Image 1 (cartoon, one colour):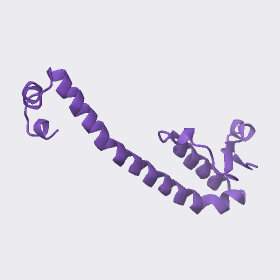
Image 2: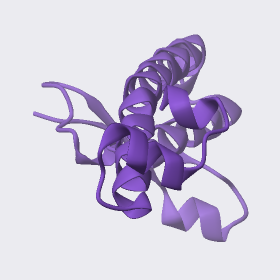
Image 3: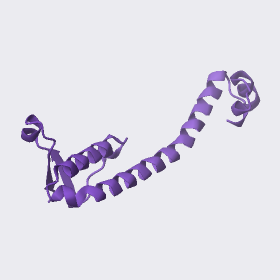
Image 4: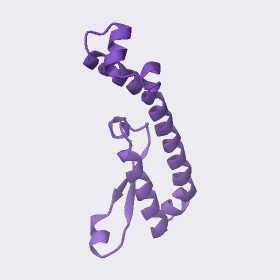
Length: 119
């Protein structure tokens, strides 16, 4: 990867490192780049989940008390969480709450959620 970063052509990299063709050098560079991106992506995902947890905690009590704006905010936060790559495949922790939209209220123009606790 250092050779490519230095502006060396794929053809010259292949010759210098011993690949049979430029495509072999290109694949090696692509694999090296993918490895360098995996760790930062995982860290970013963890940081984002922690931020969403803090945001959810800030509105949670009000949402449980029935504050419609807090409920709507909690739902939006949870929707953001499940859009994170890989998050939707994780099993929820034991006793976790599940926030669901209340379809009847939505039809009336209200954005209200129902909080259910898993057992």
